[in-house]
Image (cartoon, rainbow, N blue to C red):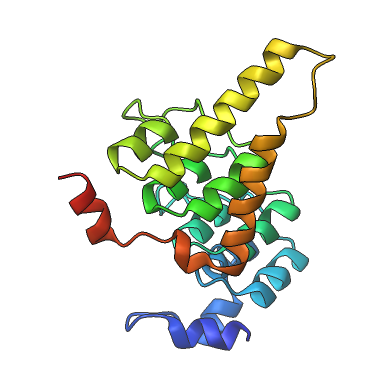
Length: 199
């Protein structure tokens, strides 16, 4: 799967294959992240793409934020392993954790929390990820965010000599991570389920 495959997936007003080849490496990484195309993402990085490239014509979104929309654990993990900033925000002050919460991607929420995403960062509407999850009545994400916050508070209270992390917390995150990798459909909630659960 290569640049030609990205061209095939483009919509009717799309760029030709030659134009895609001429894209700035950052723009190519951005497009490939949205399509979860790892070979093209790797190629873009090899040609000097900044993993935290900002698309000024699309709300200052980054490749990592682009990979969140389709819910691609593999593409997000690839970007994080290559230095993507888990807390870089778009024009609406929303980072990857905000976007994962908005889209109901429980596995990605788990991944970003493990990678140190800020739970307290607020978007332009003053909403942090847990507020967004509560508004969407997404119990799995609310549970993960509350557990992560509680674990963080316990570590701070225990100080330098405290334990490295609560075992129950680690077990729950391990279970969510395993499910996200092996049975992602179990963590997906359809938009109509979100709507009816809030009625």
